[in-house]
Amino acid sequence: MKVTIIGLGYVGITTAAGLSEIGHDVVGYDIDSSKVKTLKKGTSPIFEPGLDELLKNNIQRKRLDFTTSAEEAIHHGDIIFICTGTPSREDGSADLTQVEGAAKTVAKYINGYKLIVEKSTVPVKTAQWIERTMKLYLKKKVDFEVASNPEFLKEGDAIRDFLKPDRIVIGVGSKRAERLLRELYKPIKAPIVVTDINTAEIIKHASNAFLAMKISFINMISDLCEATGADVELVAKAMGMDKRIGKQFLRAGIGYGGSCFPKDVKALYYVGKQYGLNFELLKNVHEINESRIDVLMEHLKNALWNLKDKNIVIWGLSFKPNTDDIREAPSLKVVKRILDEGGKLTLYDPVAMDNMKKVYPENHPYIVYARDMYDAVKDKEALVILTEWDVFKQADLQKVKELMLTPIIVDGRNIYKPRKVRRMGFEYYPMGRP
Ligand code: UGA
Image (cartoon, rainbow, N blue to C red; front, side, top):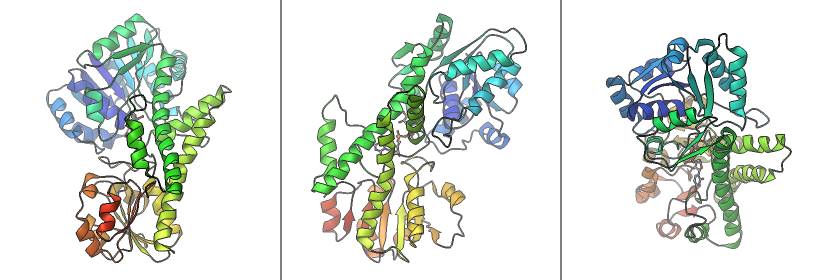
């Protein structure tokens, strides 16, 4: 099938690569010409394991191409996916101007029946706005429909999530739209849930907000464990053995970041407010998440007393492992808080340092970017762990201890066994563990 993708961010690129991989003829469109140029060479502008290979293979097979020509892009696809960004506004609501822009572009160049599918995470009723915008800006009489097909891709695991999803949700207003989307996803073995459009939009927001709630819940329990000398890791393990609860997304620590959970929790809270509903639960989810930084800073101060002029090293800047994404990453807040208290920082991350350098340049007077993880810890007074990269889990801690000035680890992700690291001579401060 002929497919067009509008908006080449995480969702757009992965969807373009995934749909071409399962045999479709895909064109990706973006106004950013340097991004399109990079993608045309089969190189992804974002770090995502396996993505470059998929891009190169499918470009070579002539099933995937990228363009900055809106006309070419809109004419190409019978199905047009809107994958533009939906960032947060000041008040927490979703800024849908890019989605509106995409709808106007489709209206301008549409040349026959198109199924316009929103894939970006959007508030309920966005499809209705897309339809209205299309009708307002259409210059000729052309048949089109709008549908919703939310994405459930996790950064770092996006290709697997695309090709082997738990479920595919399609929100449609007609049998024709359902037929088209079923055919599109035929090569993928996964249950398909067909709903009306509003329901599909809510499924996405509710799924992300629920996962964020699970994380904040276990973080709330983590605080209780800390106050009482209990161990949140064991609480989470035993809770997760109950199949009704499930073991995933119960990892306590420094909290959730990224481009999705923080934004979607706020946006869904705002939607609730719009309809006069009490969604305070989501406000609490957000507040508990924000308070993780206070807990970590308290640990650091318990360890170092004053932070002024202390040499502190951070391992892990990305909001989670296997990505270079630092959007809404806890590291951004922790770096700022340590600098505000007069600390001196050395930062290390396997792939996210270039992105961090865009926020804190290399010539920053109180920040050094380390060449490798061991070089980073040399002569430091505390090691703060903010991302659970495998390389940190497997670190040679004996070597780390010898290199550090004072062997203190403040672990925001609970990656080590407390008894083991303490036996090695470290002072160890995990989250919610005795
Ligand atoms: C999330 C969802 O998991 C995807 O299903 C969804 O499609 C995506 O948002 C989106 O809306 O685009 P993502 O943000 O890539 O995916 O990352 P997650 O793996 O969900 O992790 C989010 C954050 O929660 C990370 O900062 C992670 O460290 C944190 N987390 C996760 C915890 O603190 N504890 C956990 O137990 C799990």
